[in-house]
Image (tube, rainbow, N blue to C red; front, side, top):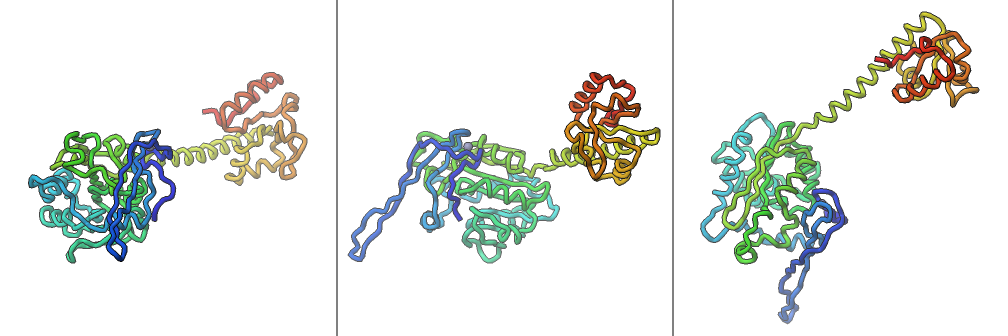
Length: 389
Ligand SMILES: [Zn+2]
């Protein structure tokens, strides 16, 4: 459940500079009720390459169970800020993207007591939202899937269906592997799905509140986000930020991000097009060599990978190679045979009257062959370059 290797979720770096320690613990008693302290220390590290801050002390199952044994709702402030107004603000921020109905599911990862799902149902008519969390705190009327958010596997993802809208509010700061989490959500998402993320904004910390108004620096908060680092993480897990702002609710600076699933068409489309184009090009090259062969014997020069591909992809070209209508030339293979066919040295080309076909695809190789031909006294008109545009 816990990764041994501590790495940076933003850049993948594994070198951290120590910046602080957080100590926590509790009283434990023996049978005679003699209380003593059991302390735990968590080390904070700053990634040496991108600056992201996280706790670099490994978490085991016992630590996690200890940290989350009391499920407390988020404490916004002591001035009357209620959770409902904050959740309402999140949904307003998402607006039309949330209400767009095209099938697919709405999922709240780390749903807690289900306040966000309840508001979605009551005020936005989204009645079929699904809550995911490691323990069930939501009521009976809510669809719920239990899952380890530090390891979202197919067993958790499958019951969610294809996700149209995912929420992860005040979750990413708690995760040991937020990159793995976002990758999993993106994989399960519709091509044009949306994601709302909210985390404490560590660029907007008010000095006089630290340590007395809020508890943002604690062992539950593994990751310390800024807009820059979270945007970088999203960009490399298949999301594009649509809207982003930071507002303060009570004592919590809320970094709000609405992102959508970014298209994966480029460069995948370009690369697959390029491979199709290269295949088409070889078919054109084959056709022009076959047409040239009608006019007389050909000297095929350069028996590398492109020659091999032409033979493999065209039975007609392979038959031509095996016929008496061609002679084969290659500097490296000269003096030997290929499939029983004699391979000659390019030195012989000057003394023959036939057309000379340049077989390698790369222009630089054909350029060197032209220069070699010129030095040997082979007339320019005898050279046939089937790759020439
Ligand atoms: Zn980093």
